[in-house]
Image (cartoon, rainbow, N blue to C red; front, side, top):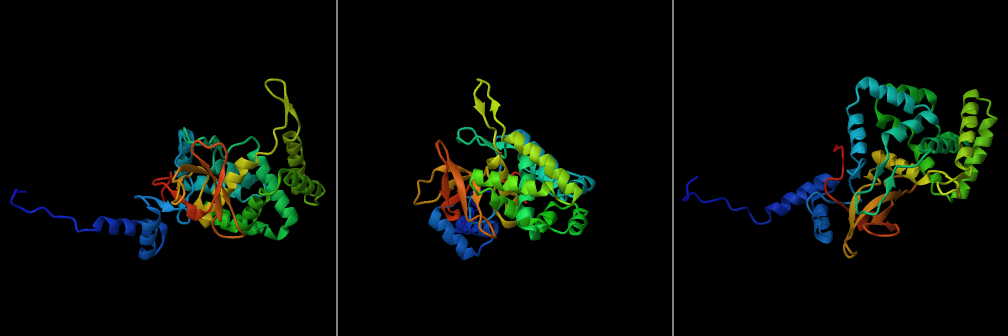
Length: 312
């Protein structure tokens, strides 16, 4: 191009209009609403309010977890069907499926967040929650024939839809006080041990023994007694991520910053608060460098750009 050829000058506001269109597409809102959001909270390129969008597998600082997630995405059809067949078997099969589907992770260095989706006995506690749910609300249990048929599709999300009610109720149980939760599990297992269904009875006997082990005092490295307890936080985060698959939201581990007029500090989502249906009604976040968690509304949080490991 010669010096005499005039260079094209970008039209004023073109970049802003492109940013609005991109945000509207990403958040699934109208152009005017996207413009309002960008203006009111100062969204940067790639960011979105946590009221919109979905983050299932947040990018973190754990390369092993990322490897497991990416490997899972590359499963063959036969492997997917094998996995969904297992996930269709309540309680233990689905519990095992979810623990593998959402492997342990950890917060980013310097965030102050430790382990996520973690805790010895996650699989066992998940199975216990399903037993409690069936004991208290038997109508939530999907028909075995339906689950068997759906499993042959090899689609996790199809099974998630069929199990949506029982999964959400299992998550609700984890909002109870620990003593209430433990008591409810014990009561449900006591009933299941006397079930006329031999398979249910055997599973209840096994889970009763596991619960006893979890609640039995042990000796620590220094000789002090302690009780391992139930891995409530890790299981809660697992079910949070699961519910987000269908209902949108942002799973534990997602990096965010607080909106104006708050202080704009960066934080990590470590949990979600749920209503009777739909996406999270709030989040539990850990501010970088903080010593305690903080509750926040979805409109108070901005999800940082490029948070999803597996863009969809």
